[in-house]
Image (cartoon, rainbow, N blue to C red):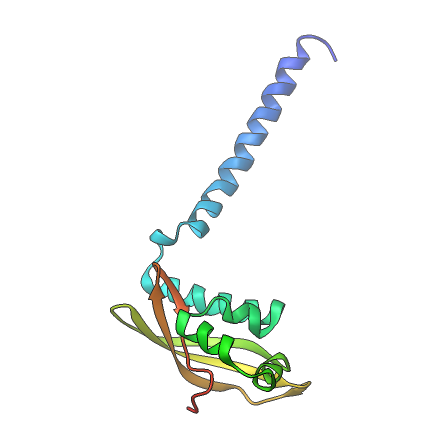
Length: 146
């Protein structure tokens, strides 16, 4: 490569880097900036994160994303109750009818559960979320029958 070609190569690399940064920076900033999301979008993200955590790390991982009351209840659950949760896989099917009232929200969540390898019919429940420390967190009573 001649001396005159080196600056051209550097400019091409720099221009390419700027294009890449220009394409990816807006996508990264928009997904990380929670303040730019509406309440409904934040709630949807919280519910999705909960079920993604359950899929990848089990009930304990999902419950770590729950409100304080649910985490406290989980910590006080018996080993038998916890063992049942470990046998359940849950897939999020859809969310709809989000209603926000102050720091509480309700959303109809349809899930499909598999218990010990046996698929269950999809079911829809009206789930509660609470806003704690500026973040929406699932906050259902795990022992409550609905």
